[in-house]
Length: 514
Picture 1 (tube, one colour):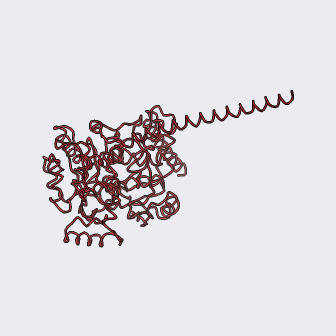
Picture 2 (tube, helix red, strand yellow; picture 1 turned 30 degrees about the vertical axis):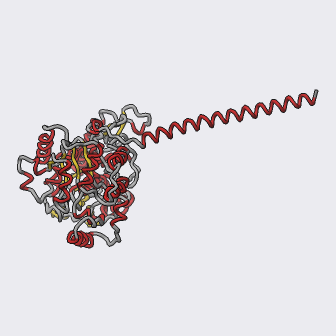
Picture 3 (tube, one colour; picture 1 turned 90 degrees about the horizontal axis):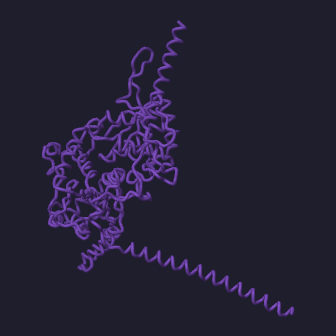
C-alpha cells in the first residue's frame, strides 16, 4: 500500500509538472502570436507606400491636443522694482533674431530685470537698419507680455546729486547655450553692481532645454503671440495669401539652394569649375576649416536638395502639374539651369514679388520685408515644405509655428533615406524610383504632435510644454482654466495698487517728518 501511495504521489506530481509546462507553453504561444501580429502590423505600417494627398491638404491629426502657452501654476506679475535693466543685441538674420528675442524675454524674467527693447543687427546681408520698431508691432509686444516682464524703449536717466545722468550698461558676452545658473549668478551680480547689463552678441545664449515648463511656455507666448509684424507687413502678407487662395489651395516651399548653404554643406561637385571656386572661397571666408568629401556628404543626406529633386519627390507623392506653389527662397545658386527642371514639373509658381500687386516688395529689395512676408505666407499656406531644415532658422521656426498654429501639414523630406535612391537614379538605375521615394515619404511625420528628440530644437517643436488636452489623463497636460488671463490681470492690478499704497505711505511718512 505504501508503495502504491508513493506511485500515485509521483504520478500526481508528474501530472502537475506536465500541466505547468502546458500552461507555460500556452503563455509562450500567446506571446509569440501577439508578437507576430504586432510585427506584421508594424511591417504593414512601415512598408506603406501611398500618401493620401487629400489628407495632406488638411491639418494633421491632433490626438486631442491644442496650443496653450498660458501659465498653469503660480505666475506672479513682474514687480515694479526690478534688479536693473537688460539690453541685448540680437545678431543674425530675421529668424535668428526672433529666437534671440524670445531668449531675451526669458532672461529678463529669470533676472527679474526690466527689458530694454531688443536691438536688431543691421544685418550685413539684408542691409536693413529698421530695427525692432521697423519690423515688429511694439505696442502689441509690450501689451502681450505685461504679465511677464517690464519693458521700456530705452534706459532712463538717473538723478544723482541733483543732476541727470545716463546709466551705462556694462557689456557682457554670455557663453553659448548658457544655463540659467549663469544668469542667476554671473549676470545678476553684474546687474546689481552696475544697474544695467548689455549682452552682445545675443544669439543662442540661453539653453533651449530647460526643466521648467513655465519658462518654456513664456518662450511660446513671445514667439507665437507677442512677436507680431507691423500692420503694413501683416496687411501685405494677407493680401498675397488672399490672392493665392482665390485660385484654391496652395503649397509653400522653402527652397534652400543658396550660396551660403551650399558652401556650408560642402556640396560643390554638381557645379561648374568657376562656381566651385566661388563656393570654396566663400566657405574658407565664412566657416571653420573642415575636410568635406562630396560623395560622403551626399550619401548621408547632408547636401541640400536640388530644385529638380524637390520636384521629383512631389511628383512621386502624387502632386501633379496643376499644384500651385509659393516659393520662399533667396537667389538660387546656379540660376535658371537648376530651376528649369522644377519649373517644367510644376509651372504654377509664385513668389513674393510676382504675388505682390502693390509693388511694395519691388521697392524694398534689400530689406527684411521680403523675409517677413515669406514667413507669414509660409505660416498660412495649406502645406509647407522645407527642403533643408538643418541649420535653417527660417525653416525651423516655421515648423514650430505651424505646429502651434494647429498642426498644419508639413512635408519634411528625409534626405538621408532619399540620398541612395537619387544616387541610383543618377547612375541610370531608375526602375522603381517613384515607389521607393513614396515609401520613404510615407514614413515621415506630416506635422502632428511628436516627441522632441535631440537635435530637434524647442523652437521647432514645443510639444508638449506649449500644448494641452481638455480631457488629459496626466494632470501636467490639462488645459489651464479659461479665466487664466483674468486672474493674471487681477494680480497685475493688485501689484499696481500695492505700489500706489507704498508710495502714499512713504509720502505720508515724509509729511509727518516735516
